[in-house]
Image 1: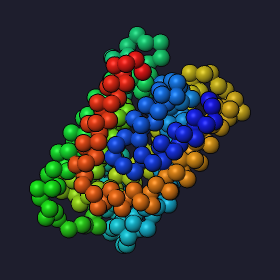
Image 2: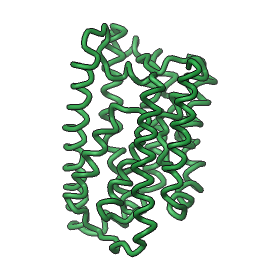
Image 3: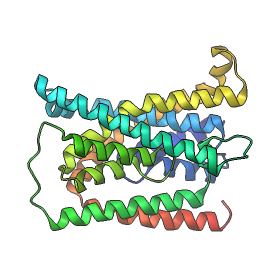
Image 4: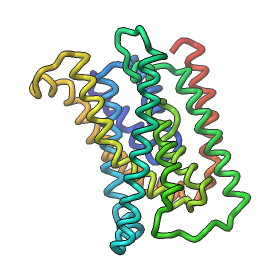
Length: 288
């Protein structure tokens, strides 16, 4: 893995992470353009580690907001904790069932039946980007028509958290179906104010990231028959460097991106996803 490729991908990830446009799709397309194989185990580990770097940037940036929104009192924290647990369980159930179904049925007979084998399919990424774009458009246009939303509440409604968690589960096997775009849009459609939906969405991502890292490291060990930490380190070192670069890029981007996201028009991101879907479909058509 070429180091400057890792740095370029880290910058792409850092700049795209906060926006609901699927940073994974952008990184995978960049990998394709750089001649890398997005489905290779070491490349999917790199993708997850880039997410890890930006997630640490998100924690550093959002911590004060989370503290004010969810940790002002024991009741606030309890409601937040229960909502996160319920949403995460539903993410695991839905995402696990989808992943298992894809690996057992759609990839039946393949020599390496991991859902990550589909990550290099630009046609699937284009379709997922289009689906995310439509969901964001629907939520954004509904928000535009009904400006009088309920005031923010320090307590997360379990039904709303359940919907957000279930939709997050749908995002797991499909690169391009923006996790943040889908979960924030779902929250908005359920009546959660956008800022609160954004806070909850990124909190869920922080919980989900370690699980994704563990899965990708397990896949790397199984596919390359690695038997020790020492044999694993040469594979992980570029990913760790990438995570550090993504963290720095994320901190730089978050300074202005968050403000732009919250003051802008949500449906614009849906339009962008549809344009990106058409672009990715064109790249697939010409042979990438």
